[in-house]
Length: 99
Image 1 (cartoon, rainbow, N blue to C red):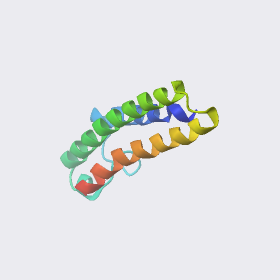
Image 2 (spheres, one colour; image 1 turned 60 degrees about the vertical axis):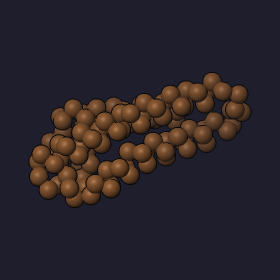
Image 3 (cartoon, helix red, strand yellow; image 1 turned 45 degrees about the vertical axis):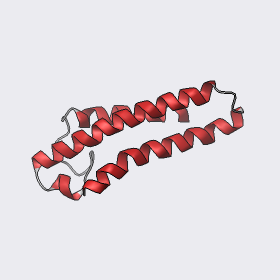
Image 4 (tube, rainbow, N blue to C red; image 1 turned 120 degrees about the vertical axis):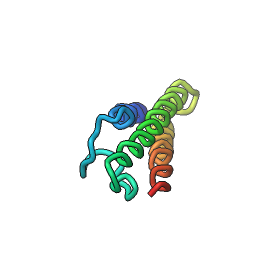
């Protein structure tokens, strides 16, 4: 269900925030400054992971409020999608500014 997708962001970002993801070409925030050195990789990914955990958690809470609201059922998936886009932007924009 679309309303639970922000929790996926949380799950994906926990290993990044904990520094468990080594430099690679698949998983993590691969921006120029993060690829400059291994310490930079861990620092940028820790920042992105923390931001992702917070944004995903807040997004999930907002979606719970939407689910329990008086908003008509056909309108709720659109609202969940808006929350999802905002969560993704909150994660990506700060990291891209570091590049």
